[in-house]
Image (cartoon, rainbow, N blue to C red; front, side):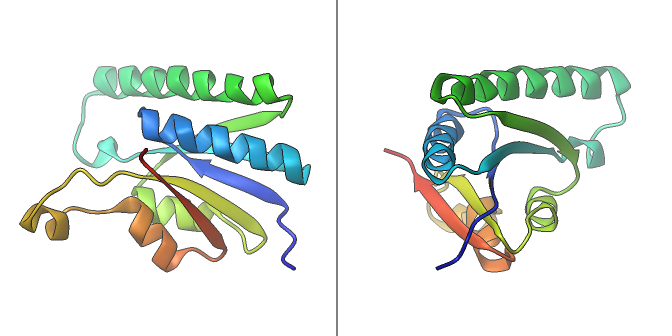
Length: 138
């Protein structure tokens, strides 16, 4: 059996991510391990506005704080971290071999867009150095 040391929960500001956080926190409680919520801001490559970048950082801090409070409800201490970079690369780099990543799957693209659009959960599964649990939308 693989012993997980930490659950890593990459999030964005969606209900799907909130659902993944709930599942991750419950599993962390059952396994008696730590959990860390991360979000990756990749807008720096598209923007040069310091004001807009700061607003996005504050928005990310606000929704991550809301998600952290889910841990409080379950009696699990959750740490949060905002990372700058490309989501898939940063999530994979952040995870260690003894982690478990719990990530929401967003499947909103249709047709040809489905093949052209980056799918973070799919690419994390392909590249992660650890096990990944993908939480699908209800």
